[in-house]
Image 1: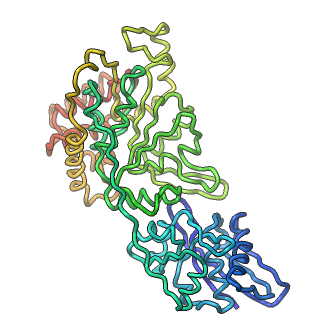
Image 2: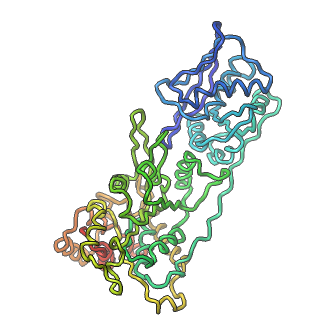
Image 3: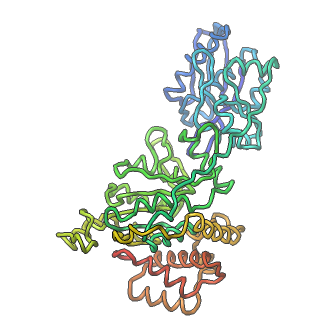
Length: 504
C-alpha cells in the first residue's frame, strides 16, 4: 500500500514541492529512505520510529520504503521528519490519505513525539499557497508561517496532536500571524557634531539607495555616522518585508514569528570569509549581502577585507542578486542592498590630518586605498571625505538636524520614486534606473548637460560613472521635490563623485 505526503526542499529562497511516498509491502522487515537524502534525512527513520513508539504505535513487520520525489533533487534538513511520519501513518491506515495529501508539512520530531521548530516556515507557506494546500508545522513556527494569508496554517506541538487532528478527535485551530515588531529608537544624527557634508551624503544615499564610501582619519566619526543611517531610512513596504523575512527565515533569524518593518543593517567584521559575505558553506546558506537585502551592508575598515572578498561584490552590486554555485547546486539569492563602506586614508590613518602628518605620504595612502580596485571604486555613487572634528566644535552644543526631520525628507523622496516607478517592473528606487528609463527621468537641463560633458572630458568619467551621476542627481532633485534635474543637482552629484582621490 502506498500513501503520499508533501513537504518542501529549499533552493535559495525558493521552496520546491517534494512528494513523500511511503510503501508498506511484504518482505524482509526494514525501513529505508531513498531520493538523495542527506544524513539528517536518513536519520529521520529512527526519530519517526521512536516517536511512534512513544504513542504506542507499532510499525508493521513489513518492508517500509520512503521515496522523496523528485529523486534527483538533494534533500537536506531535519524538517522531513513530520511528512515522513504522516506518509507512514497514512500507509498503515491510521490517518486518512486524502487529508494528508492536501497538506504541506515540515517539522523535526523528538524521540518523545514533540515537534521541534525548523527554519524556512515562511517560504514553505508560500509554496503551500501556490500548490493550493494548507501548511502543517511545529507550533513554534506557526506565527511565522501565518504571515502568508493565502493558505491555512496549522501548528501542532506534538505528533499526537497531529494524529488527533486528522482523526477528528481534536482539530487544530488555524495559527495566527506574529506581531509586527516595533522599530527600535535608533541613534540620532543630531548627536553628531560637524560633518555636515557627510550627513548630507547619508541623506542622499538613503533617499535613492546609493552606495557610499567614507574616508577619514581614525575617530573622525565614520562609524558614528554609519550607525545612524538606519534612523533615516523609511520602513519596509509590505512586499519588501516579506522578501526580507523569507531570507531571514531560511537563516533562522526571525524571532518568535514576528516580522519587522525595519530595514536590515548588517555589519560583518573584516575577517569574514567569502562564504559568510556572499553565501555558501553547507547547504549554500545566504550570506551577509543577502541578509542585507532591502537594507544596509556596512563594511568598516573596507580595505582590510580580503581582496577576493571585495571583488565578489562587484557583480551583486550591479545585478541585485547572487548565484552561489556548488558542484551539486546553483542557488540564487536576492541582494539589493545599500553598500556603506568606511576606510582610513592610509595604514596609519593620518595621511589627511595636518596635525599628525603621515611620514610615508603619499605612497602610504596610494598603497592602502589601492587595495580597492578601480572597478569596485567605480560602483560607489557617493564618496565623502570625513575630516577630524576640532575640539572647539566638539565643545559646542549640538545644533544639527534630527534624524526625524531628515527621515521625513527621505520618505517624501522615496514616495515620489514609488509613484514614478509604479508601472516599471524591477524598479523601486533611483539606484535601479538604467537604459531608456534613466534617460527619460534623469536627463538634466541644458546647463546640467554642459556641466557633465565638461566633467566627463576633463576628469575621465566612465560610462558607468556618468550613469551613476545622473541617478544621484535625480535623487537630489527628488529631495528638492523638483520634477526636473537641474544644473545645481548635477553639480552636487558630481562633487560627491570625485570627493575621494581616486579614479572615476
